[in-house]
Length: 553
Image 1 (spheres, rainbow, N blue to C red):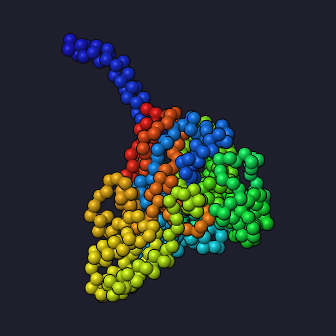
Image 2 (image 1 turned 90 degrees about the horizontal axis):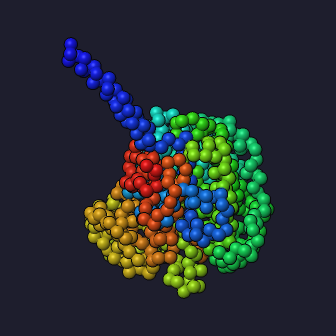
Image 3 (image 1 turned 90 degrees about the vertical axis):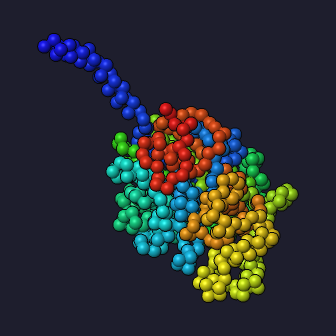
């Protein structure tokens, strides 16, 4: 009896401690991950890092400046692979993996198994929805891994929604992933409609139909003039120069641009994409998606992936040093402010997490660099292809050994190699040596090298991470810095040079610290960081690391 009374007294005295320990444990568990109602991922297509610093004095206080001052700014963020194109870029941001893993090795690539070029988001097995055009035959089926949005869907038993929005199909589809509730892109031409495919649904939701019927796209077929007095755009080159493409039907690539008048010769509604108004239209649709899908309305985290595609169209047309690019970014700053304000009103300040980055940068127009005595130039693909064909025919008895040359990759016809008894490694070495002697080619890599060696630094590492054993070619060549295969006007991208790899990265909102860092980070770190923040599994192919410095403990 005495022992029983002692035990009772001990348990009675210990009860508050046990309860306190249980409470502390529960509290700790509640704080091990953030629970934003909505994650908003923003990718700005063709945004060089220096667009933040170059235009900083001209930005308002509620766009880029608000994100940087109240969020966490990674100033030394880079792509860790080549090629730096839109398809691989968007995929890597959301999968946390490089092309070697996720398989999106370019926007278009030669499929050696089909013997034809394929498009990263193209899918002939689905039907267009919202149009009869083949522009709707798209899906993420060529992406081999999950995205962070996929993992959120799986983790929440498919209760967390995912919606993808972009003018470009690939900018909408690849980030949203395989399990998205919807991915929408803009089909211009004579329709000016937001569309999708049967991969996601049988018909457009009513809110999308209503948006299309609102003639919002038509409202942007208007005059594009500079937001401010053009004389104040001193952060860019002169408006009239020889380095810009412009629009058909207008003699000079100079402001102003009458889009309604120029539309007939420039793809109808497609002309909107090549102006800042494409960003306005994207924000309009993104806000309609938040309302139409009820994103961020409950305690289960949703995803909204937004890609601003217009900066890429403008950069390709006018070049990175143009007044047109600067005006596009000054107006994009206002769009970000509009989006943030709407998120605060619709989802609630502090209830969402946002990140902003780019899918690649862009090179200065080589003709402009040449005028400033900076080494640069243009690579003529068909001249190289002809010279290589003659070399292979002379050395190996047939030019048919080369099946395709694209994306700076050379593909062999292995059936011809077998028929002609040509050793693949000997052909690799011979072509690599020939290419290395060719003007404006800086480096070469062979399949044997890339399959048998792990590179850990420099351009070789970037090539390695971009090389997919099954989908890539047999010899890869790298052009000299600031040498491009492109028109003599406008800018492009795709290289492993800093102008293409250095991309902005900003985290903001729920669960994010305020601060900045010059520590080197990589684009593949974004998805695992968001995964760690949410307490969900990393995308299944992710190779990046969570950026601990940005997450509130």
